[in-house]
Image (cartoon, rainbow, N blue to C red; front, side):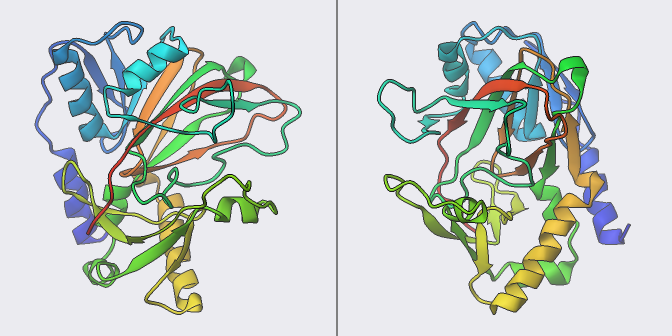
Length: 292
């Protein structure tokens, strides 16, 4: 490992111990993710519990809560700890726009999230995060894991020269790309978002720099030719996918809720369980515009 990268990893793994009074936090890796125990999310959290959950969220970016029995309203209430809810479906009479059903079975020919991405980055204010609650997982624990990658660390591991180059670039994110990539046209009622974001942004809460491009939504880097843009983006995507140090893996169990920071991580819902069934629902939280 290059010296600058080694220094970044050492700095991030030598954090002081985090005191928690109302919950327990067990890291998944030294650099990303944690399991949280001691909370019943079907109940309203106390102010101290909320404070400690938010602290763990900023520290670990991905939080896993096991053995939770949640109604849709309780799911949304816990999401509200992090901010206002963000609609996740187009308006349909009689449906809840804040609850997205996640399902895959023997009849599925594709699944959402099967590839490295962040959700909805074409929006002017990409969502703060998502909360996915699974009630059914592939029988016998046969696959269906979700991988996460730390975008702060993805940036830190780049060379100083590459960091300086990326710092002056912006990229167009296009909400139509996932549709066209699947050979489809966005619904007529969908107001397709297209937003230019810096390639490197600062986290709105912590001020830490992070890499902010992803294959499903990023069209191109606006300051470069298409050939240059495709080459550079391909390198950055390979960096995320092929650097295990950036990643953690969540192995799902029934009645598990996972919340992740949509700004500071990418995720990949691995579809390795066909024809088995995986069911749940997802809620998202409103974010803010991102800046360099």
